[in-house]
Figure: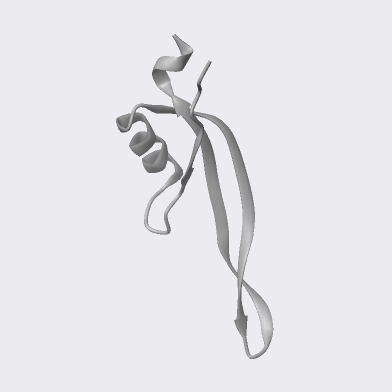
Length: 64
């Protein structure tokens, strides 16, 4: 009970593995993942920028 879920976003300058390591250092573990494309406007047209990746996390001690 009382699982506090938070979202970690993979930053532009880090790998997925680095994000997961950062999550573990904070005492959290991944229980879900979502991705969505990010676009920006170039000359009035939406242009793909990058993939936004987020991990849903819960405190690691909640699983023991």
